[in-house]
Image (tube, rainbow, N blue to C red):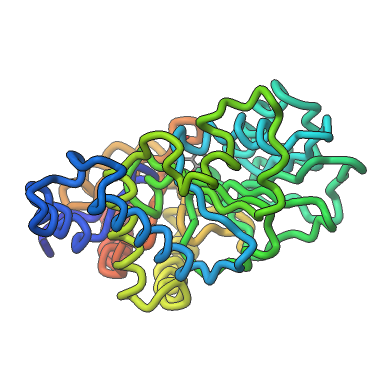
Length: 361
Ligand SMILES: *Cc1c(COP(=O)(O)O)cnc(C)c1O
């Protein structure tokens, strides 16, 4: 397993090798049941245990207050761009959106199909290199919620503190940094994200919803995506993505073995410091995001001489450093260093950055 390459994909992304090995060993016969998890009835005793354990482990990892509910659903974060307004707009025609990068821009655009989406501030004029400062936000008076993306996967910006928006529920797309560190969930009304970045495999969407916000759906909200119905049915209103929940459950147990979120945060901090430090020390590469907002999970960077991009990626692949190409909308490079990326992977990347610069500088 130590010979596996290091995969820096932004998502679907690398998973802990231990988790993959465990899933492989249980593939044909889950713990003497004679069934693969994929083949189990979602109502049966075996799957029920997997499902309930995953919910309980996630609650424990997050140290979730009693008045928050975890929902396992589908459709990814992009579906939530529509489902957030459909679940929260009762009695309020308007919702507030901060645009801090390409993912929150998508959320804002989709929401305007369902409500009066109000732009509180945008970082676009700054090229999404910094988070619009809180004192520049123009909040509306009667918004159903304020939506932010707490980690912009493409642009590489992260919120490290929940912004103060008063009594209005704060809704956050946490897709690409969920479980990378402890979060004060009580500052938020809703957290949501697709699992394929830091939690598991594609096909599962995880939501954390404050209980009182489960009562605000519009009548047109599709039943299968109505948070109240999902919650009342323990995330089994209809067939859940059973295998994806099983994999997420293995990741939750792996996280607990690592020492939980405070311990994983220390590791993530060390990885990010190592990589940003190497970029900042070099004249060959750069990352120009405001240091105060640099994401610990997604590190976009560029070569000053972009004619070397292809050679850089080819050499990286030969060394077992995979999927470093930046998002097509911004170009350049991007190293995603989620929980499952070991420090050794970042060390190998830093060594390669230096060797390549030496050869071509
Ligand atoms: C990947 C990503 C999305 C899109 O998620 P899907 O599961 O493909 O719908 C949305 N927001 C953020 C922050 C992401 O990283």
